[in-house]
Image (cartoon, rainbow, N blue to C red; front, side, top):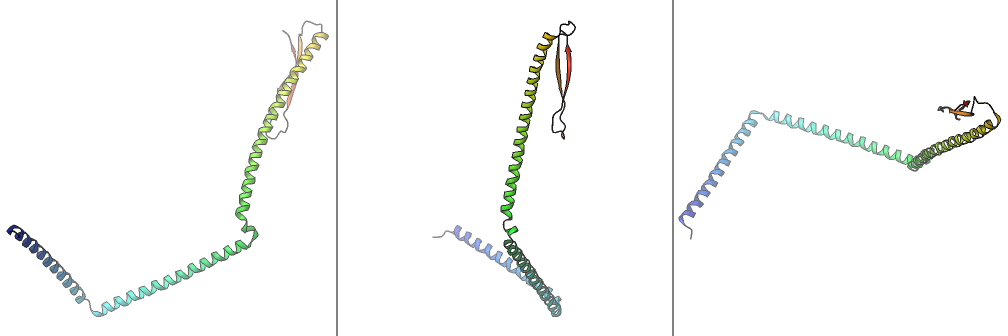
Length: 185
């Protein structure tokens, strides 16, 4: 059993739906009238001219599309020819492998140069130290000979002093400047 309240509610909802549909019909009729007025103001020749113009534009676009497709196909064919030429040419076929090998050779050469530079510096330091020790030994011998051979009191000893010259970038050898020094204590 449906109560009066539910029945009234149902009638109100139906009435609201009916009014909404009526409004929608009025809107559509207004749109139809506006469209008819627009078409009615244009004559048939204008509409035909618009259709012909649209057809020409469509044909022009289709022609442009075909021309573009042809250009793309030509470019793809040219790329294929170049790929074939590169794969048939020994120099290009092994280009990636050759490049990788040359890069490896370059890195190995750089590392070898760095190692040689380190070895050169170590050898240079070792030779410098050896020279210093040898000069100390020579000075000890000279001092002993001086004390034995010289009987005067004005000079106690003599030594050979070494001034190491700076090595320039172009110089292959280090230069040493020697001088004899008299020592009095």
